Structure formats: structure tokens, C-alpha cells
Length: 392
Image 1: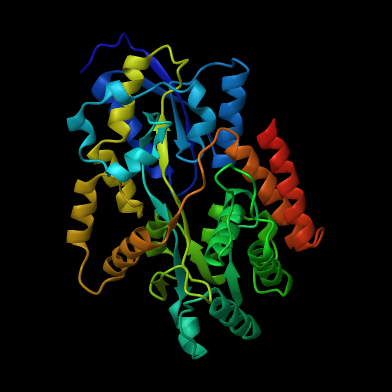
Image 2: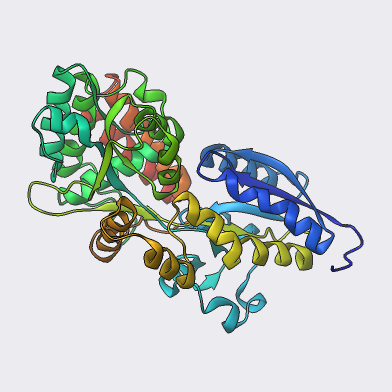
């Protein structure tokens, strides 16, 4: 056991059924190193981001380790401790090089990846078979399937109606439809024909009743639960929720497919990586580094992997693929995820005000979905506000 004079580390973590199981290992860390861990905050990513930003900008009591994300870390970079010199090449060699690059901000390693997120289509095999339907391959086919199952008395499709999840679904539809989010100068490009068509799909899916009635107030956890508890027939969901299906009412009646593509054949899947970082204001950097290395160790990664997360350590990935039984749903999932990662990944651009830009966009999208704005009005409003943000 290390003697660290019984120091206590304060941490701020993302919460939810897909993420919480890992934190049981914090007690093992305390037993091994004699360092206590105080969870000062847990919440959804939007809640966590707001809390961390407030803490960092207003000089509130410092954290020693935080959950972050490769798309949010650039906005936090000036408050984070650089990690490049704190990890040896041997300590990093098991991590996917591409995901380490994703965790860098302007070439500097600012966080250590926890997982890789890429969505697949989860669908009720029993309901589609009952109605003589096949798993949709395109967004247009998904709309047809959703309409058919809704007419049969089921809920068709669920997607996040708020926050980053709503943005992500729009992002997938936009890019697969031939649109752009930003140009190389970070000027908004989504107020386009492709953007209007993407938002029109989201609005129509909600307004014709093919989704849960409460969709505008549903984020990732609620969306996943809607499918897992048997309400919704289809969802594009994250890997971390996969492990929760094994003991759910739909455990034996669901199947998987690739996220739908556009009618033109383009598939675009919103991806990213949860990660852990150390604030530069930490007074216990040495101890925080011990915790960071512990919580991203092979043993800790295995906990997340058993929940369904895509591991960022190559050794864990190889083990999972080796252990997946032929023709099992687990083996099929790895095949679909590998194809997605190889062919369809889209990642938002990295810039310091990105989280604010994303907030502006999803709020405008939501106003259109619930009928307050037209597609053109919503996208024009968001574009104008983001241009002002970038200029400032």
C-alpha cells in the first residue's frame, strides 16, 4: 500500500446505468493505495459539463479528476493538466492510437479515453416478424417500418429529443444526406437543403405519433430505457447500454443492425470517446495520476466492457471478440461495430466554444420538432447565433 498521508481526492463523474458500475472499483483503489475518493458530483453529461465549467471558471473547490469527453475537452483544455509526460510509451501502447489522438487537443494529450461510442440500430425482431417487416437499411425504410408498427398499436422509433442526443441524430441525418455541419473556417453550413430534410424527418417522426409522446424531454438514459422496457420498437443506441438488455423484458426478442444510411447509400454514425482528465488546479496531481491510471487500467476497462462499452485497450477488445460465441448476438454486435468504425464514423470538430454551439443547435432543433419554428427558421436562427458565437 502507498502511504499518501491519507489524502482524499475529489472527483466529478458522469452518472447513469451505463457508467455507474465502473465506480465500484473506487473502493478497491482506496484499499490498495490508502487514498480516499470523494464523489463530489455525479450527473448526466450536460449537467456535469455545466457543473465543471462553473467550478473551473468561478474558483469553486477544485476537483482532482473529472469525467469528460473528446468533444468537450477542447473547451476545458485551459483548465486541464497535460498528460503527455506522465505516461510512458509502455503505459500507452495498449490503447488504440486513433483514440489517443482523439483525446489530444492541439497535439497535447489532455485526457485518457474510457471507451469508444458508436451507435447501432436495436430493433424488436418479434414485432417486425409479426408484421412481415425486415430491419430497415435506410432512414426512409425506418420511417416506413415505424409507421407500420405504429398502425399496429406499437411505438415505432425513439431518439433523444434534447441535448447532445438530439444534435447527434440530426448530425447523422445531415451528413448522410450530403450536408455539412461546419466549413473549414468553422462557419455553420447546416442551414441547407440537407439540413432542412434532416430536421423535417425528426419533426415528422415526432408529430405523426411514431415516437413516445414525451420524446422532447427524453435524453440517452430515457431513450434506451424506452426500448429496453418494451415500449419502443427501434432505437439507435450506444454500446454501453447493451449489457442492460440481458435482464430486460426484451432480452430474447431483439436484434441488431447497422445504423440506417441515406437513400443515396451514405451511412454516417455519430461517434466519440468518454474520457477522464485531471484539472490543472488539483492540489494532489501525483495521487490523481494514480487514480487516473487505475480507472483506465485493463481491469477497470474490463468492467466497462462487460457492460457493453467498446474498450479502448486493444488487449480487452481482442479478449471480448475471442470470447464471443459464433452466431451469437455478441459476435454479431462486434461485426457491426467493426464495420461502423471502419466506414461510417463522423466526429464533430474540436474548438473551444463547441459545447455552446451544440447547445444553440439542439435547442433550435427541438423548437422545430415541437412546432414552435419551421425547419428553415430553426436552422437559420441557430446558424446566426453560432456565427455570432464564433466571431466573439
